[in-house]
Image 1 (spheres, rainbow, N blue to C red):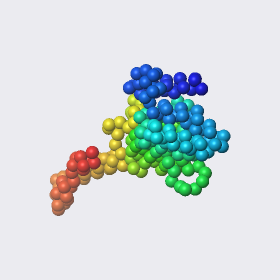
Image 2: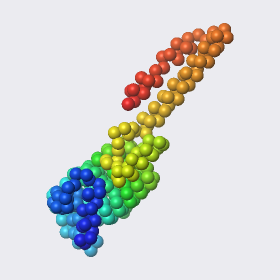
Image 3: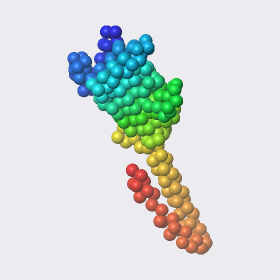
Image 4: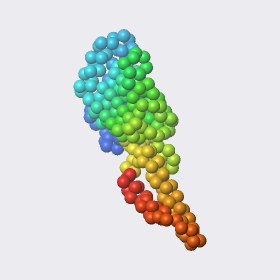
Length: 251
């Protein structure tokens, strides 16, 4: 048990630059308190059949820490809950080793049916503040969920999901963020200041493509006019298209 406690304390220093001492972690970190209480008391009681007592003691932990962890949830090693206020982890949720959750995260269900109804987080997942991961879905190893995202479908390993509903960030931008996250050891809040919604990125690319097509059309009109072909008001119509203005509206 003491080895696990030392491990949990070390995780805080690895992922929170604000941590100054082990005493501070033990006395001032509600995420640490909630996880220790879950592992050593409520989850053990739940697995031994003391269901009401487990729920009652978990309710007390929620009142003290602001973090609600159902005693039936399965939580692995070196899991870190930063700040923690408003975190909700459902009964059938499974959190594998080395995951990070920020405040306001919900691992919730979308059904009233019995059985598996909460998410499974594979090792190394980071979920940003306010994100909602809902239903019996799987978030693959090393995936990142952006702040305030709403995830209702499986997320592939190593992917980054943002938006409502969450969409997967692809391409060079995702790779650049992953490289930076590796240097840091984790990706704070699973999102960066320059992270755009994938739909916005797609629209930007469509606008850029339309602008390139417009430029080629204008060159074609000029060539036809130089050859004596009457093109009417085609050039005036093309001039009304302003890709720069459209891109500014999307930013």
